[in-house]
Image 1 (cartoon, rainbow, N blue to C red):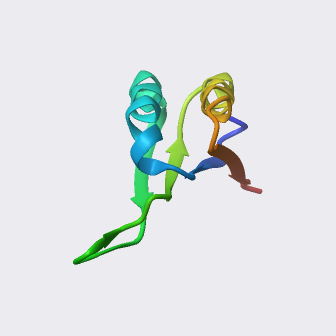
Image 2: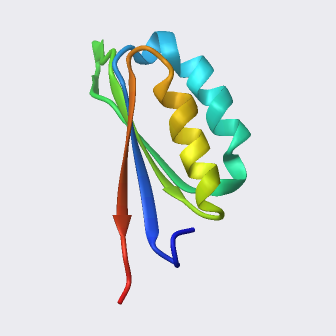
Length: 88
């Protein structure tokens, strides 16, 4: 990882229902590099949003999270952004 920085990937799925199965396969392949995973989408008694957001706290070699982000960004309707929190 980038010198003990905290790296968080934000993954936006525009069509959660369509893309979730394939995205899940990719996340499973990188499971040993995902420390924390949080999934967010709007839901109520009679509504479940078609889009969603996944937050991943990454660990391990930086090449792994870069590969993961690159793979997911190749899906239509999936966007990955990175946040890095450094330490002094």
